[in-house]
Length: 85
Image 1 (spheres, rainbow, N blue to C red):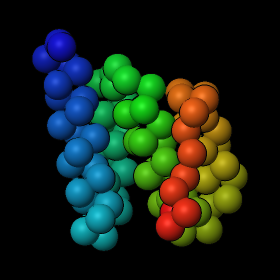
Image 2 (image 1 turned 120 degrees about the vertical axis):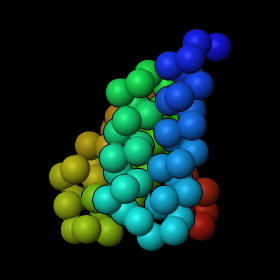
Image 3 (image 1 turned 60 degrees about the vertical axis):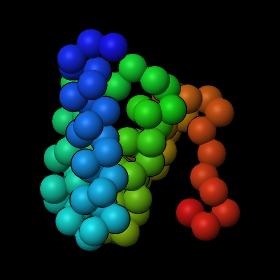
Image 4 (image 1 turned 45 degrees about the vertical axis):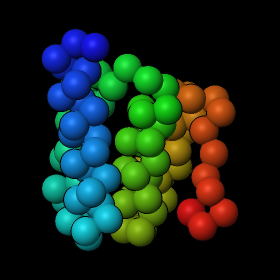
């Protein structure tokens, strides 16, 4: 894997960790950074969009929430949410 792909994966992991710790602004920056760096796997792209969608939904930004979920499905047609999500 390329250095950019490795960095993208690190940013994705950091973004998910920030999200889980409640640092949503930082998480959004990291997740968007991961996408900008070029996540190679469709599942990783979908995961980044999913967490961005969650933050928009919680923030009451319904249009952006739907848009991120659409991007997740575009990235990975098999994308789905777990029952807990």
